[in-house]
Image (cartoon, rainbow, N blue to C red):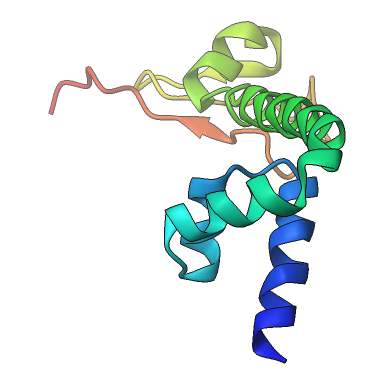
Length: 117
């Protein structure tokens, strides 16, 4: 029964766009055994596999792009300077008269790092 489950898992992962190295690593099998199994049993699925590889690659690329769009607090404040006011000590804080309501992820304060102590 376990061998059959492995075969089904190999087929499923192959059709999801994983190569023999990745499948072997996920299932804890030898790379050559997985490669031979794919070669012998899934030659008719090569086209579907190639499409899945492209889809998987594009999905990873899109995810990485979204993850790298993060904007730091200081950059956000520089881009939206009009809602902040400068305190006498140089800190920037939200001006509640200009922006009484802000989202939870809006930076509330930027501390002046060049303060004289």
